[in-house]
Length: 480
Image 1 (spheres, rainbow, N blue to C red):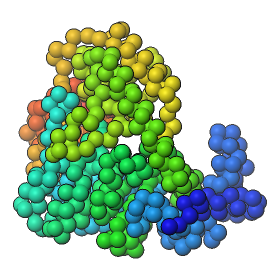
Image 2 (image 1 turned 30 degrees about the vertical axis):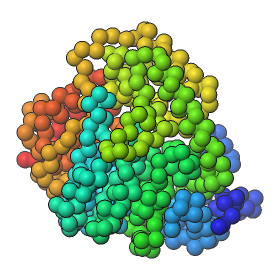
Image 3 (image 1 turned 30 degrees about the horizontal axis):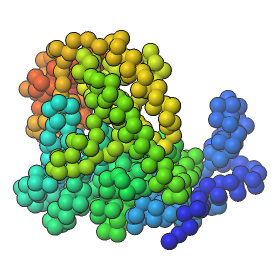
Image 4 (image 1 turned 90 degrees about the vertical axis):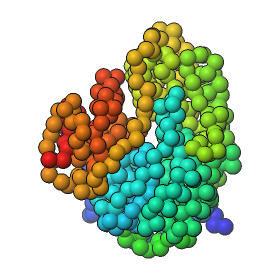
């Protein structure tokens, strides 16, 4: 075992800062001297380590010293054979996974409720999705996990597929049977890729669902900045020993910046050390706070903060109990309406609100008094804003009808039509509420009346719709 008390990259930056080196390199602010407002905003220490790659600080594109050592420590902490520091967020990590195993025309099996980054990767590399459409919880309106029996059928029907991509967990905390999925895929010679953006903490507490690496997945994309606590946009790409790490580095370097931020890199190094040394007890506190919040919110009435009772052994194999997802439709309010009221009237910023649910992200930085404030606000909100729920839309997920591969549709000749006149046409762009960033429509999918009604309802309720060329989402691009 390596010494997890070390933070080699952070320590190298500290040594460098004390040397008072005269900078004749980039960045041009020269330790903040050229931009006093930046120093005032971020502080001297922060801008003082916003530096360029150099021999004492290694190079992210080809690490051989302190960055390499820091990546090795991260791999060990997460039970992986190798890790890569990513400064383009988990979007970059997810896309690097797909680019590493798929080329144009290759099939990849995945649930349709993936983050947009995965489908964007298919547009870029030309791989063909084979969707395992998840079941939908009819009350909550949310998509569930990937069922092994459905995966088995997809593998049988598509023996030429090269990989399986799975969410671990979904944004709402739903977990699939990772070990069974890995077993099925590997038995048929397919790689397993895990979008573990919301599962950083799985490696650090035995009460939580199994991590992708522990389940035997080949690659995993980890959002350290979400539940881990590093700076926004910093993530990890984890590899098992089944993957050629040197080739993956080449793939990463096709798209990742050559000017990596040392603020992001050092935050990954410090955060890994913190999780390795204190992660178990830190996430136990998170589990306890989220569980307490669920109990208190459910006691209010008309809210449903769901948890492990959803587990059914198939479409919900496990549940991430740190996720505080709350169903709001019984109040007569869409989740996005509750989201807006909490922010505008109570000064509480939650992660997102959709058509039927809200998600309050509970993490290592939260305090019990914050939980109490949220619970009190929800109690008050019910008293003041509850209304008749008749006529509300409930579905968050609509199974798509794929007509054309994403890449072909995206780059084809297209025409813009009013959304209301697009029924029966093939979409050539994305439509999604962000967050959570799961496309309602992706390039190559059939536009149905149900989808049009959903988009119009989401706009009416105030969801942040994006992805279309038309900023107002009044028109949509379709195949000419």
